[in-house]
Amino acid sequence: MDEDRDIPDRESVANWVKRQERQIKTWFAARCALRALPTALSSFDELKEKETLIAFCALLYACADCVRSTYPTICMTRSFYKFFMNAYSAGRSIVNRRSDPRAIAASYAYDVIGYSATRSGSHPSLENSNAVKTAFPVPFEEGIQHEHRSFDPGVEVLTAIQLDMQNPNHWGKLWHDAGMPDDVQRSWETIRSKLEQAPHDWSFWIEWYEAILNGTPLPWELTVRTALEITDAEWDDGPTTVARRINEIQRDYKTSVTPRLVRLESGLWDVEQDAEVAAEPLEFAIAQVEIALTAALSANQGNGLKETSSETILIRMACGEFRAFPSVVATSLWNACMGLQRNIGDVYPDDASLIALQNTLFTSVDELCEQDPLIRGRVAKLAALETRRMPTFQEREDLLQVPEMVAEDLTAPALEQLSDAIEAVSSTEKPARIWRAKLVNWLNTLGRGLDAAQKNEKRASWLLKLARSISGWFFDVDE
Image (cartoon, rainbow, N blue to C red; front, top):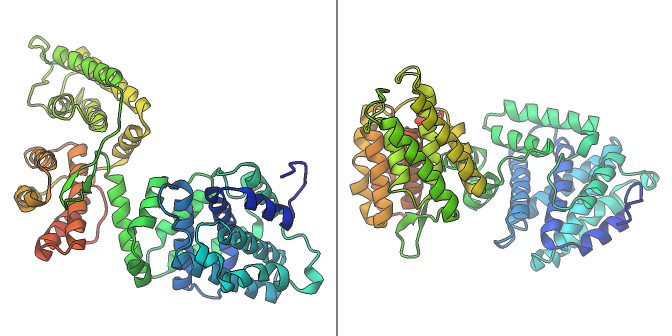
């Protein structure tokens, strides 16, 4: 594109899109659609939940496809196609009412979306569809009344499109520094108000859209998992089912602070591969912590720290049996560091060796976080988890039954780790966050996995019920 142009015209945009790789085309289409969304949805006099859900689903798919190019494109699924047809219908309705200049801007966006999506080369069957070929050009070519044909289709939209073309694959503010146009802002505020007052839970979609709007998207892992893990049947079931599944996925994401369980081809569940960290920084961090711990445990310190103290147990496990799992080392050391920060001056005296141990833990975690973004992300998620309550007596008793119940479904290493976490939680008055989070995550995974495989429905239901109960350690859950 000639960067000296004030604003692009349709031909220059089309030519630019044609030269881009599929991922950039999808990103560009998604950005255009996200800008057009408030105008499209505001054309309905009342909130139409089905159409609104399809629209959000489609845009979620497109955004997920932009950041996860290693799997086959998902943006051209049935739901995404439905969204374009609904957007086209809404755009035509606005244009035919000749309500305001934003109508022309919206129709221009639909045309760009259609061009980039159907010419991406990612879905030939849709590319050759007569419905797609005829539908998308219509709003721009025919939907605008004759007297409006020379009208500039919204300088804000065209400026945003131009800036996107200069910054491919960038997820900055949707409207860049110019801000959201006033009428689009009013449209979104109206839609948001309707969603907030709707009988179903739309809070995730409001947060998700406004995060993209502000240039601070929610974690892409969460977007991708939401797109991949909600089935077509669940989307078709409507907003209640989708909201429930999104809440489950969010809880699973937030408690993913250690390597997760993954199903092997054999059907067994095993612990996924952890982050890879060079031996030198990992061993150096562990060695520094071990030295500081030995000093703090010295008999002449008299600081109250013992081998049976929760912080010591965490550190020993991190530096011992979990030494091969760098993210577990980091999250365990962080948890121990926070325990000392909370307990020094209360449970323990204000002792120099304990303060030195706390500082060593902090710097060691910081060094490990610099080694890999996965480690950094898991420590951040653990830090963000807030304890709402501790395990009940009944939950501790139920947890002790889990290892025997799922032994046939886990590899030996996974069963050992699960048993260790259950022992740590069931035998401690205030168990560390890392073990509680791990159990919430793993039991949800096992329960859903067994349920999906229809393996022993009674066992799956019991696990899911227990997983839902212990989710209350961190989240508000409906009983």
